[in-house]
Length: 327
Image (cartoon, rainbow, N blue to C red; front, side, top):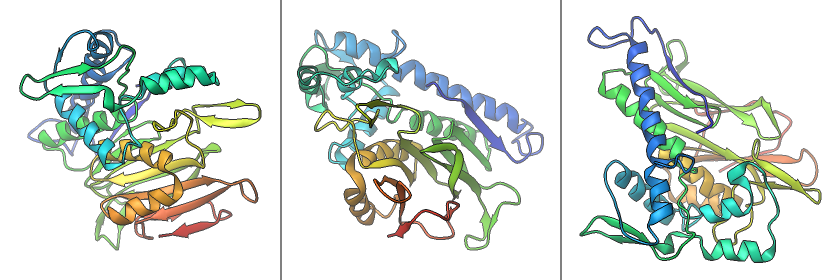
């Protein structure tokens, strides 16, 4: 997944379970991420997703666990976001060059053709026979917007199944799952220990923008800090709008808190596409999710912060020079 994963515990020697050191439990849990990548990665020719992309337009491909569960979860999050998250938009990603990390501006004909081959509308599922079919050649499934979250959830679940109670597993600087708390990192409001995670400034990735305190929740950030290109003086993000086939615009990053990392991961991508107003409305309708948006401004500080369903017990803003709106 082109990401360094870390597993944090209070004391690797003391915080284990039934005689197993916490470090051993953590290493076993991290192995689950390799399993997820073996199944979901479009960069591995033998993965389930690669087989579907290569063959499902010609014949039925069986759906088996655990892929089926992750697949159905992805479709459900796509419906929840009204299509802003779409696992079958891989043709757009390739058309804009992001599959090779070489962003390019496609011709109008290339974009239209990629858009015609994009979307879950091209998927056909036979529930009785448990098979999937693509209705045309060139449709590409890509779980890049949720795969990291699935991996984090699988690692966290494996650690919990082995009795570990206090840990944080994170993928790079864009995803984390918290269980229990870090010893000494106490929240008076929650009356418990928590894990504190920083959110980077999308224009200055080495500078923290905010700190978020996690308590048995997950976090994911989507943005253009690392994957973007400049064309005719304008910055284009790698996050594409499935409805238009163009890069989403208006936001620099979106950080989402939710019950699971898969939900946070997919919805951070969706909210980047949805934009400011729709994201605020979505979170107000779905209080189980919280969001921190960094908007792209043409004047002043060049960015603005918007926090939805977050309070001072959860969020600390470090960038005092930026305007902040709270919903």
